[in-house]
Image (cartoon, rainbow, N blue to C red; front, side, top):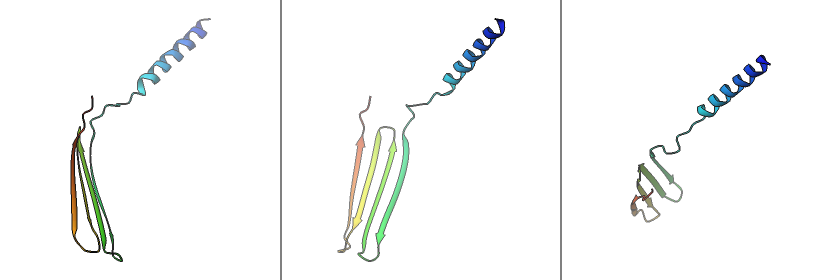
Length: 83
């Protein structure tokens, strides 16, 4: 009877440790930055995109040029109102 009690106690301790070990931070601070571009030498099209996030602030930039070689740039700034 004592051995069964010890086995059950050991299983409870291991199970409790396993539950505590699997924690994950769902509220990590969001911070990232990326940029990429594509250029087609055949059609002379060129497109670029960049994005940067720091907390609730997102900055985006799009740039493109087509056959007329006029470069067009659009910048977006957003502030996410998250609770």
